[in-house]
Amino acid sequence: MVILLFGPPGSGKGTQSRLLSSWLGVPALSTGEMLRSEVAEGTDLGRAVSELLATGKFVSDELVNQIVVRKLLQPDHARGCLLDGYPRTVQQAEHLEQFLASAGKNRSHVVHLDVPSEMIVARLTNRLQCPNCKRIYNVSSGELRWTTECGECGALLERRADDREAVILQRLHTYHDITGPILRLYNGEHYHRIEGTLPPEDVFLQIQQSLRPHLGPLTPSY
Ligand SMILES: [Zn+2]
Image (cartoon, rainbow, N blue to C red; front, side, top):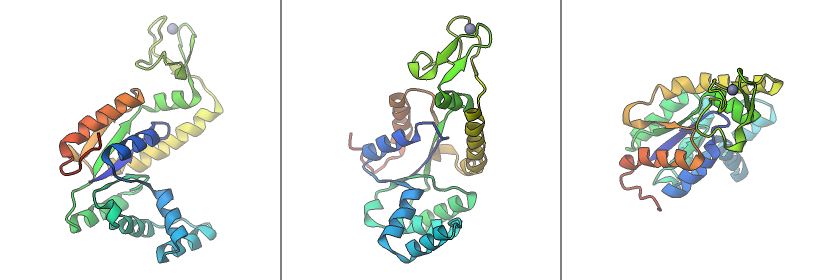
């Protein structure tokens, strides 16, 4: 089973990736790590990657596709794996699914950690303010785990403006531009929308519940 993990920066994707990998007993692969390991192993693909990187060029879809497929064909990935950061384009997603189909494997399952941009920005900048009574909430205090409403007056809390927010919002826009079209390729039982605003342990429980009916011969280690 191939699982594709999607979530905006700040969604806790790294944590869920580690939990899932250990629960399912399958490796978690990030595109960056795959490229680095090809380079380290000095494979033909690795040499092509290091030449591109040395000249400041992007690694093409085609090259990344080849590297991912090579990884998936290795025996330690026979039971499945978790991919993070791939596919980055619709073309890559189509390539991946064609490869899986041709290898007689199931279509990938997408785990989508859905967190509203407001919450991501709040998490990353760490504070929200009530527009009504002006009270400031520190997001990491735990007080706002379940709500984005003011505890004093019930108004919907707002982000406070600062420079970092603009940068974070830009990253989130880029993320949505890239992932929107890819997520639309997966639907029905292959698409798992996870409420990513909950605490990490509850997010993981949702993922387990959503994936469990599809695991087949893949036996979780607990
Ligand atoms: Zn208030």
